[in-house]
Image 1 (tube, each protein chain N blue to C red):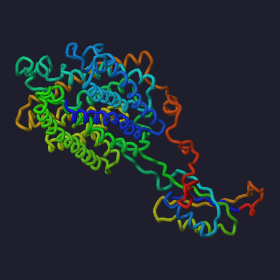
Image 2: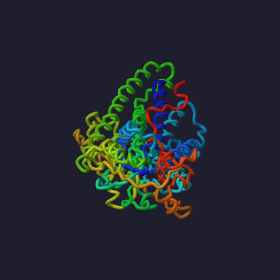
Image 3: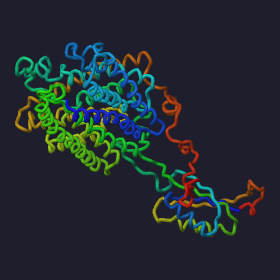
Length: 461
Length: 112
């Protein structure tokens, strides 16, 4: 790593950390006014719990050297970051923010009905059994990477020899299509099937309480996503300016900088254009199906496009990213209706956006990758590998989420009482109200009487 | 004395207030209300899920006035609140038995 890259990763880590509060705004605006604080607290509590767990054993399980069957690494090897030093802290910082966000993503499916205590127990268990292992498998050189013992190597064999031996067709997941989005999306699906619907789902209106919050959240997510994707750049040259010693410093610096600057711009542009195209995709579907293009649709389109480009942002051309984005926007806009058809209460469409978008991105690579994609005449092999890692990630996430979900259900239960759910989870679980809306109880606000002719006390000073 | 109650469109409130002030009405009570008449509600669609929103936001203005002013005040309100479209609202008048000004204890017309 060189200093420029290090500075960019720390900047990216800060951007990605901001995505979790941004997600809280995005989700919070979509819930009813009686549930917005709980919704936002589910994200903020993920920052608390997962942030601590990551430092304790998350990093060790994901990136430790003591691999266990290719599935995870020894959680005690680097417990509490003991033995971690120097430049590794930069990677810890970046990866920590991913774990926090992924866990928080699930919460949107569970809106307005889950005990806060159950969520707090779920968080450390889920990142330990589902997230850290998948991060290890995909990015830590494990089962879903291009390693010699990996799934891709089993399917199409290996090339090279010795230390350079890798899978002939290596899977591509640049910033977390499988680890983050498919993982969170499947977990959301399993949990909503397990804990059931909100009272009145599909009958009573559950209109979003504050769409401007959602728009703000979507904007901040987009901003943070540049850290998420562009910060995921990994050097493949092996030219290490800092650890290269005095002899190789200049040569290594040039090689490193050339590779870095040659890739990050493309990743940024791909990320931007996929989200842009996805807004269009989502809004066109809405206009044709519902008659109007909505602000919630635009906000959702941004996220759908970003989800899809996450694994693909380093492998596609800008035009390919545009195609991926518009397809993701349109498909997710259609997919959010499935919950009503099948009767599962994925409240804020974590399945419809993150699972579907994650699959569009992960599988879309098989068609659109400039190097290896079907549309570029490179056959179906990459698609097969992408399909395989997606299926395995889904299976892993589903199994462990189900185990954790069932355990919590039998020991402490997931749901607040029916009475409390009607009363509003903010008041019951947190003892707070988001908005001082006296009108909610039938007493009118005085705001209408405020005219432009009155100025607040002290305004003249 | 009569109580005039007007339920009007929220965005017409400022015009109604100005017209009443020009006419010489010095006080009124205003509440945010919701309801519907012939206008009914409307439909909203969120991520493809359609909701019938039956209640429409309205402003409810209440004025107590002397009998001889009633017709004029109602005219002022109706004129200033009208857009000619469905959902403009309603104005109704009911008799008032007595009024007391809390600060001074003045009664009826003197309290208006």
